[in-house]
Image (cartoon, rainbow, N blue to C red; front, side, top):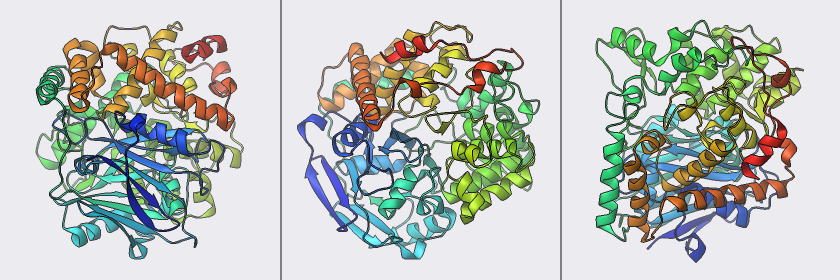
Length: 581
């Protein structure tokens, strides 16, 4: 029987509830946003007692569906003030789903501030235990001790927050372990780690021993859909074994986006980085080969992932340095800060993993700080020092740990590439108009995962679209809706490459969901459900005080031409307002 686990941090009790009828078919983002909209006052302080954190596996998570271990973490964001859903791929979500837990709702706050607890969940129930011995420790120190205490990587999975979350920093993410137990998989954006910190919840440990598993209403239909999707993923050039992602990881995009003149460089001053080839996915692959003597294809972030895009970077002596250097991290600490040294980028990534930080927002804050004179662009040593400042919670560290917008205000920097308080990811909107529209109208601040129009605009998936074309209202709208559904299904967003090009793969995704739930959805329902999710989130934001005036890109982008194309942001406001109506 599926259930909701409600954790009251004021009373320190964890209780199970029946799933309301309206939530029975919902999972992932659909469920987290629904519960947040139903239970969280939109005008509440994100770090106050009335906010909640909702953690939910996707619809098919915990089954044999390929690449389906995503988990959503929702609440009101302390970074943006909007509704937030951030997600990660981790085996934690699969264990939770197999225990029949549809969502965890964390509410209330400890009466005494500074208290931290951990939640242990198994087949017999859930209990809160003191987490004082791990408070203040880095996650690379804390996770191994928890594994030793609870039975090992094979037995349990862990959700945790680092010292950044304890210190209530708006750049704090929610960390999950990967297959080998590294604290490296993050639902990073929007500061949800700080919200958990405000609740006093440091860790959740899940043990699914003898779990009943996920009930499947129509096994034959599910198996049919699973095969269709798996066949699509293993045949598409981007997602297949030894394809682009498996070989070079997401950082394969560095050279591609740089060539397109859209790789934001030195705090979005330029669209090309002269050091791009030194930090690209190809450089990671070749560097690992030289340092280890092996051709290292990438690994899965979680069981059942057949795309396997997670990489590992090694030191000159062949020992492991960090995992994983994703495209966004590679860019945030690389081109955006003018740094072309993979060892520096790897160390910055490792520190963010340890402290519990969003690499995009921290990289953005450091680039803004460089703009403000705290360091020179390209100074990797100083960038490392600044991340340590965040970890130590010094005054400068707390400014940087509050994100790029706060950093800009503190140091008098007007050029801050953010929307609704969230730093832009690794695609220049002046050079790729559709992703710029996505940044502007996203319910969660500048967020490429809200609608990855890069697929057609740059990669030619589902047909090449001119990156400079301004008439993309329908394209951006459709990507928003489809993405909201994928985020609810439990699948990784990267299945989009295959399902956009291979119709049977799209059909397979829908059939998987129908097989699990016993529904009869079709392709039109994907758009319908996605629209419902977006409309719900927009309603929350309107109540929180957001208007169409917040669906805009920074002023400097409308007047500063971006080299090498020398284009400005020129999408009329009226066109932006038409995307979601």
